[in-house]
Image (cartoon, rainbow, N blue to C red; front, side, top):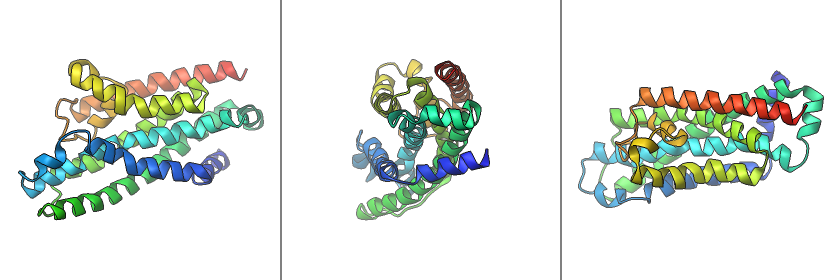
Length: 242
């Protein structure tokens, strides 16, 4: 099993996949930040509140982790090598190995994104005459992004196994949370906040979306989504490779 995990980790940081994930990691916080008037409101706030608001997009780091998790599965469907992999190491080891590797990649990615975004936030605040002053709320956002990314990676891998197609899985894990769920949050927040992506975002307590679930409630719902989709992925994968 260790060899399988090591192989998956090596694949995750090789080829065009690395560049694609890094670019996505750079753009997701920017997309979330510019989706509302955060930059316009920031100048009327104190430094601590403005810092927390600028770090809020880190709550959506799970999107990058989900993409990486899905790609770890769907790249083998894309290249037609999944059947050979299953024949060589067995479905159980492939399933578990890809899931564990996805978690490792998610933690490293999210930590890197958080560090880089803190630098971006400091520059933006400085340009607007404010200091970078991370308070307790900002710390909750940064730390809460990590469990969100871990569960996001597992959800992404599950989607990859269920869909079995690179483009379809990418559309689900990328467009689902950022486009569909965010729009749904604006029209039906009481329902939307229980959706998979928004429960993951809730773990980081983003100050720009106060209507999300409390972190403890979001964790419970997110774990439920993860268990259901992972179980479905196991069943679908088993049937596909009988």
